[in-house]
Length: 239
Image (cartoon, rainbow, N blue to C red; front, side):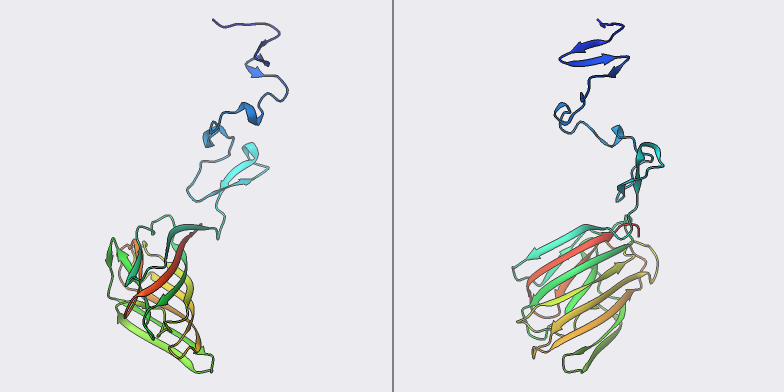
């Protein structure tokens, strides 16, 4: 039965009066069960949204608000391998949560003068048509290096790389799940050594004509294997 008192009651050193804990320092860290406080128990001024961060807002109820933090990166895919393989895939990484993605790539082709290619994936099926783009840059001797492609089978990230030094690139993948024609783009910058070990630096961009929503990407060499790879893809919050 309920125990009542005009002055409150004390149980195990905790004083309760008018339905409130009145003992000083009664709700301290050691008195809270692990995983006992969730988002619903916090006084936050709005409802949560995937990818948002909890921010301090002194003018709002409870002083806390879920808010978009523009430019924050959320890792959606990661492959790291020192085993030789003809290709490496990241599947199920694209969704309507993000419209833009950042990628970082480092790899070694097994064959000298091999090109590094990227393709979209529809499930586990590589998309092998309707890429259009260009890249341009220079090698260390000042010689111009470029290529252009219309209706090709891949995004060409390199013109041909040394098999003794790393190929490295980073860039953006945009609108892979937009459902719009001509909206998907890959923009990149890349550093590599050619088969004579002269350093080259290029920037480039491709677009894809299809309106189909794609779910991932595949990286491969146009000849031989990739002997090692480190590839990370991040969704950009607020896009």
